Amino acid sequence: MREFLTQPLSDTDPQLAEIIKHEEERQQNTLELIASENHVSVAVRQVAGSVFTNKYAEGYPGRRYYGGCVNMDAVENLARDRAKQLFHCDHVNVQPHSGASANIAVYMACVNPGDTVLSLDLAHGGHLSHGLKVNLSGHLYKIVPYGCSRKDERIDMAEVRRLAREHKPKLIIAGFSAYPRVLDFEAFGEIAREVGARLMSDIAHIAGLVAVGLHPSPIPHSDFTTTTTHKTLRGPRGGMIMCREDDAKLIDKWVFPGTQGGPLMHIIAAKAAAFGEALRPEFKVYQQQILDNAQALAAALRSHGYRLVSGGTDNHLLLVDLRDVHPDLTGKQAEQWLESAGIITNKNMIPFDERKPTQTSGLRLGTPALTTRGLKTGEMKTVADLIHRVLSSDGDEAVVAKIRGEVRDLCAQFPVPHA
Ligand SMILES: *Cc1c(COP(=O)(O)O)cnc(C)c1O
Image 1 (cartoon, rainbow, N blue to C red):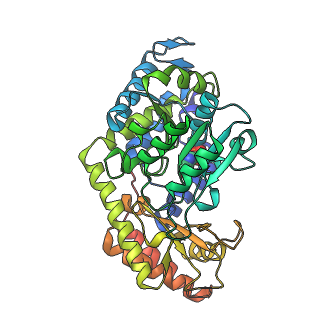
Image 2 (cartoon, rainbow, N blue to C red):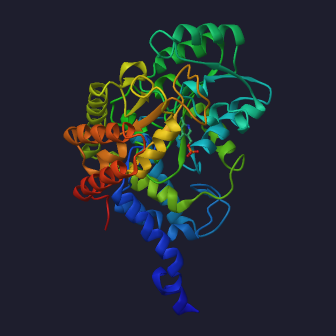
Image 3 (cartoon, protein in one colour):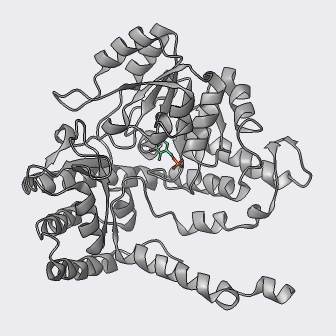
């Protein structure tokens, strides 16, 4: 029995070991352009697989429901202290299991079923946890969506203000999963105060940029700032909530016991590891390179005739409108052809899209993962050329197979982080 517990996975469960090996190979041999994904460090993975996975630690440091929590307290305090240093917030809760869980805790803390919530339209780049009909948020609250203007495809703050005055929401949400421009958190804060709403800023996508000052911080303007830890922040999969001291007890109560049970202590430990990495000077260099790469990718795609939603990008992601170059190509088909060539992307609605969400006219591309692997602006031009060739191939298998080979060669020059 004990022997079994100490043998490597390849001996005890070759079937599972094989699947993991295949995923390692897939990540090494494909170009990851999904804007919400990244490759974490070996250290973060090591900590996520540490003995902290064995422990129950319901409660908070100094107030646990179980014995044996001395090291749990140390690691959670470390994660909190580093998060506060990184984001300059008064209080942080590092226990949310995910970005969606973090948002649910905030909803429970400040809105009741039937209350009005003003959030970015999902078809204009909002996130499903901000009011999708079949999500808890859309099920429990009256969602009023704001969107981008037709003129410049940017969030129209005058429209946000008008809707806020008209509908008097209890909560306003500033945040996106597919919007390539800077968010004006200061203006959101002013509007929220004017109408007596609370403001939740969800920086799931841009947390890394915010941490190093390459995107204005929502912290001074928001009641609650939620984020994931696994996107540009490049930590383990998870969430967290930042707020002022006044709301600390309320938020902590609604995370545990309000909406979660025992915290994932191995993931909290890995969050501490990732925040430690993010506090190093190299992390700012990395975030700047993400932005430089996004600019280079945008320029190269434009040179092939592609229109980018809002004309370009200020952050790590771009939304490509496929229609000008390929009027009959849907985002869905583009995503499939690109995947066959080893280029991983996702179809995405563009503002005022005439196609259905299952088809779409857009493609979302992001540079965080490729930047982690060490690709720079020169390679972004190569990547744009590869994308354009795939999209212009009509799905021709021979052409796609040839490009697949070129993608593999490019990947071989830029290994994903491995021990
Ligand atoms: C990714 C994302 C989330 C959800 O994160 P999960 O960890 O997948 O639950 C929440 N909000 C925004 C804006 C996101 O982009």
